[in-house]
Length: 366
Image (spheres, rainbow, N blue to C red):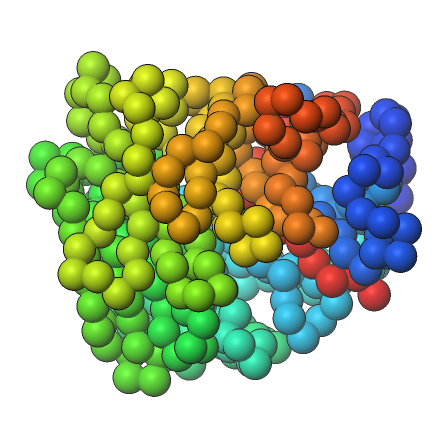
């Protein structure tokens, strides 16, 4: 937790620029906050919540770099911060008070993969973890109040990363990246020649894999995903092959017997530079945003046809969320942007001494 002096210094840094009146109408501004992990120039790591007018609500210091935040559905103003792989912490933050409510350490021979999701009723948290002794991923079922482990399910593959709850509330879709790692070599990829990524559906009632789909190119790692209100899954890919290869980097799935690639010109795939970060669906506009930090662009796609619409330049962009039926993006330069098509006005806000991490979410304010 930050001291009062540290908090005031950070708050001044975060609120030094102009306000953000462009996100929501006045009646909605006090109902939502945005939450993201970030690092500063001294390589200290934090999780921050800021409101939709650009004011810092609260923040806490993290023991190591954070990754995917998840809003707690039963506790307004609270969010889970998942450690970046191969981190061993899971933290519940009370952004109302600027306090760490609970901090959980991964059990022996496990580390977190950076993502998780709550059950529909909010009583369970499904955290994605690596069982590095046995060499496979797990979905760990935790009580959402005390985070004690209730069940462990095999995730259906190696290197699971992001997961989402399907509309039926009983099925979890998992992006199994297929890449084997071990905390003794924290960021090294150990099986690129034999990696086997898969989009996996897990029955939460039985803990059993009920469907699994693979791509012909086994070096296209399935990493991040989102699910539409109709149950369509969209996933972003990270290519682990030769740097000169030109490969498609987005897929969809909804009921068919195989995964489908999105449609774009070769130039678009080239500009995405073999790497995607966040995937975010806007159900109102039937559009998908996929961030490409190595290509310095946000790509926008038609959710119904899987076809490319537009790209928006944003250096080192990664985090994406939807607020008031509009996309919001963050990057490693401290920028918050409401991306629009190239012909429309871009609304942005610049934070000082902030490198936003890969993911962004909104939480219900008190």
